[in-house]
Amino acid sequence: MIRSEAEWANGRPQTQCYPYLAYLAALSCGAGLALIVAATLFQLSRPFNATAASERLAKIQNERPDSIVLPFDLRYNAEFKIYRLEIERPEIVWFSTSRAGSAMAEMFKPYRFYNMSFTGWTTDQLMEAFERATRDVRPRVAIISLDYFLFTDRWADQLRTSREMIFNQPLRYFESSLGDFVRTALRHWPVFQDYARSPNNFIGTQAILQHEGFRRDGSWLFTQAHIDTAIRQYRNVDFLVASLPGAPELSRRQKAPIERIADLARERGIKLIAIQLPYIRAAVTFLDGRSSNDTFYGVWREFESGSTRAWLSRLGVPFFNLSHSQIDDDPENFIDAYHPSELGMQKVVKGLMKDPEFRTALAAPQ
Image (cartoon, rainbow, N blue to C red; front, side):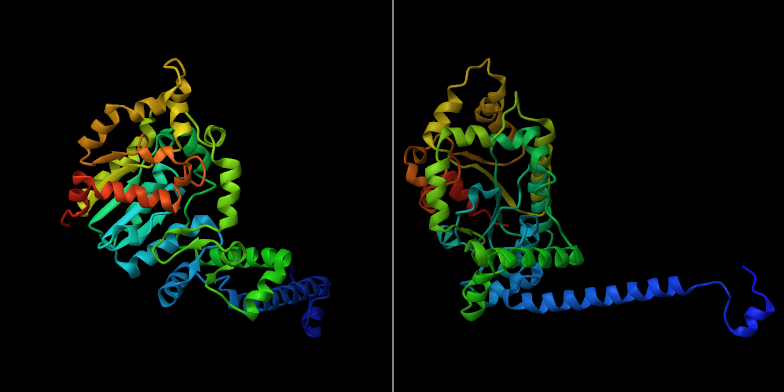
């Protein structure tokens, strides 16, 4: 719009721009207020390490070896644990879903061990966690948990997004973790008041609330209440059937990431071992009892067959399949139908250590 001489003489256009200036002023005030609120909430969250980034959480746990750390969202587990790997520099690393969560460093003495469980929910995620974790840290041995249900496309499609690991997004982490703290504290403020008065070894919003999380060696600490509930409700065949999908056969798409892991292990000088952990006996009996006409459990039959062991052997990966072990018989070895308890995992590792093939693989030079 061209101004008239009168408008220039008056120093401003005659058009009314005040509403726009008022809008900008209000916007600026709103942004300023939002920054003040965010800064206040950030200060409020600091005693609880609610917004501490993954690298900081890893350092805190190193400074406080007895601490229990839990990122506010499981999608940041891998990022946190990779920082822990860089500090711990273990000889042996176990990559898994939550199934191997009870594996502890003391079970693998005299070797240095770290548990990367709760990071690979699908074979794609298992491969990504392995690739990222071994870029700079080269353990002598890497154990990967393999289960029949990991090789179903249905399992992968269900969890690909909801449990996708997130890396190197500090702003997203800060915003989301602060929001999680605010929501959690509003519902459970007395818990955080008690913590502020008498801090304990739990680090992070959800660790403080749940009293669960990762130990220094990466293993998971369960509360007794959690274990008791799981035993009552989930240590049965129905839970396994409802939780774990089936398929006619092993998916080629889900096998490809395992082959990539084997390639990476060779390239990086890492001895790779695969393990299928036990299930409760009733679950194994149920799966074994499915008719050959029941294509839904064809994936179980194929995974248990010699063809799977031959496939892994061609990849240079020794496979220790414990699905039909004596550990299946005692319910006390399990938290639910397919998560070994600490007692069960102790028996798993003790049994493996007696196996000459496993001992040889474990002691393999880098």
